[in-house]
Image (cartoon, rainbow, N blue to C red; front, side):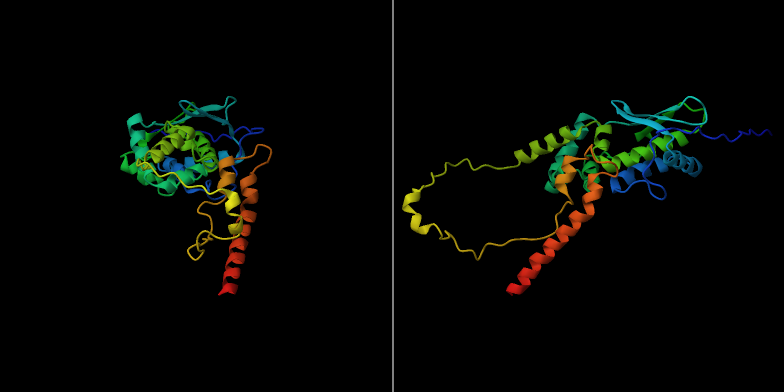
Length: 286
């Protein structure tokens, strides 16, 4: 019986490499990014995953780019030339996307959350209704390749690129849609079209509204045309945190972790204080 022994080698240090924000523990913050990372972790042995995490945190990933054929990255290993990594997901067919859009449009909250830059927690149910999956669920859904000599695929270089990509998902939930074959603009346009088609218009001719000249209503200027007993104001926390900031996206002039992270705590505190003040006023009226 013969045994092969490979002498451990040290990866070459990279200047200005892409370093993961995560220094320990989980790589992703949002659930959709965690689902992406989990897809790879099912395919890679623990040893290569551990080394991939180390590579990602040390900055061994030189570049990572989204292309029409998926994601391509360069990862520096122990050799002089960086390894070329490819990560690809099978895009959905046009007919499959149409079924997904039909299912998504049935829930108005999906459109609202996607417009705000959030991935709805239940969005996978819409894909399941179309008999497809948003995230890789089978080995054949996720295709990886690396130019390194490691016999295993995915290898630690693929894992490193995958972890960095997971952090990109945190910043841009629409990345998974693009990898599946649709841009953010295409997704939102399809949803708006379907939502608009659901609006029913009364085709019966309406009687023209009688407009009374203002000079004949001066004595009623301060009067209400209807009682206020039925008028109510609902004050509650927003369904989506910081929707406007999320729609605007990351500001290029603000360093990491970004303007959203910097303003998250003040925004939440201001909302809490506004609700406290509003309900204090109501309690005083009772």
